Length: 467
Image (cartoon, rainbow, N blue to C red; front, side, top):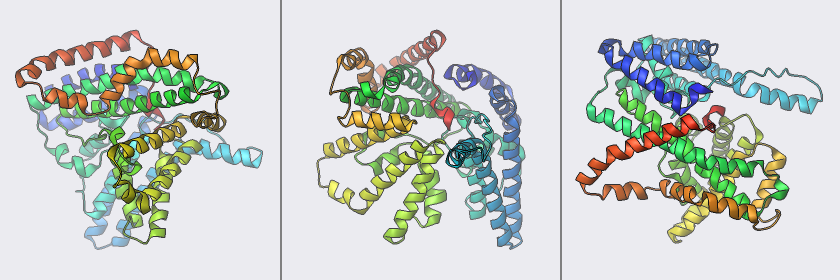
């Protein structure tokens, strides 16, 4: 879809910035709301009605929660929160999971018991439903103020920099910024820099490496070698990271250009030494949301071991299925549930005594196996792919592996280094005069190369679409 590509984001950003900065300060939220709705409606004109419904329902429910609490009617306040949660989950269930459940029920029944509707998935529905749902919950908890201005609330819900691809932003983290935010030259320049870095990640790294993964995903599992299967998963692991973190960087950069400061969403996750650490570094906003609004209310870790295991089961089943309506996502979530239970109960304490490199190897191995489960939705193909990874394929190595490994080695090496803070740390060690002079040149070069790739190339997958 053209509106979801980085090239479209770049062009639309120019229009947004022009309109935004010529609009008087008091009207900038209104201008943003209109521009946000145009942005979303450009790709899905019909689904803009869902956006209006989401804004209206959660805005009124926030007001209702406050009114009930002010009158001492806690039962009514809880009912309002429950109503908001049910609406948002039902909205997401209908568009994201109805056909999945209907297809499985019909397969079990042997006839059409439930109608498969075939509705396309509204872009970003998993993000904005979580954001609006958390608003009502936070108002009830007293963690967020009730927003009485529907324009301001609508701006929060539809904020286009992170609307289609995250990160998941809680209202309480953006409350003050919606009312008062700083617009400085330094902040704008920082936003441009961050946006360009994200664009380069997505276009120059994720797209390039993604083509290697596509080769191995399309290879019949009976023809996969062990090294070939691992090379394919390595390519997918890097593609996914630079795609996800690239869009997050672009969102953070766009936000800064508009005066907002969004929280970080990735922190070099492939440096992790355990699955537990990986989920503190990967998709931080999603992990934070599930921890705050599901894990802690269930009791978190401050309960007896059996209950803690149950809590983790619920959270990781939900985390898995949040990523997509397919059994492999649920299995992927349960895979991490098992890993985290094992680590929390005994393994982490033992691993602390081992050299750091052992933890890195252990974590990367488990993460890559997990990405294989995540990436291959067809069960038959997934089983064959995992068998090949563990030595039950067409051999250990073949000519295809050597060909692709040699041809993709430069980009793989660059991507592996870029997934660590090494380049950033080396850059910081440069003399101030040098990096100040070099920074504009590097940014312009990155922007030119990314734009040229987008204009000339046809391969630009949007991995966030399924969410």
